[in-house]
Image: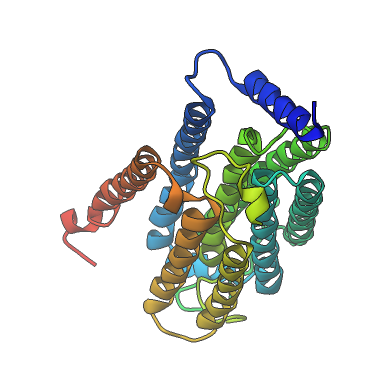
Length: 234
Length: 107
């Protein structure tokens, strides 16, 4: 038997192993998994959507308090983090592509870079959180906010609502990032051990979808939380 | 590349690397643009511009990075359903909150 025949044989056997008995073929199985992931992302959109709705309601009620709260944000750290996430989405997309074309090592390298970007994002977010924490910009008994001299002055409890939403929305997003880093780490290990082939790479594809979704949420969080009004420093 | 393409599953769409890099570059430029736009006082249009840029970025991510452009009708309907439900949540909530002061007849 020629070497190429052995490879084809192995490929077929891999495909047979990957195909679950309740699906007609690999294509149907892949389609079903992708659809399932999109359904999950739909529930995620509604999950984050609840927080976005709360943001919408309170921002329209206490606009000035939201402006003053957002002025405590470090726009440059926020913008850097946006860029970091976009870069991570690129490496993720290229990683999925490498899985499609069966380039195992390239895929592992690209996914490792994606993890590094993810950890970089969390690190920068941590620096921001630390800053807000030491400046008493965390809702609760220690919350303290000096309103910028305006007439009428902003009620600090309204700014506290801004910070409650800031921590809840970015916190939930950061939790998704942590889970994403964990999932991609699993892909790296499984991928390195040869679990994926060009005919079966569904986990790479759907975890990719998850990763891009988390990027998508940040694309909205950044302008809504950091860029409310240009009047910085009052 | 043609050599590798022979091996992929029939329904799986393979986007060229250049497309991904192009989308990435556009997203980066848009991020710079949204920061720049926020530094100009446009009044109420600041939020409009910010959300417009975010939506352009989001659309690019969903269509190309998430392959929606090449996905089945079923997946497209799922995404449209998500947007529709989100729209319902926003709009029905706002019909309450934005009209409350009408009843008290002021402001």
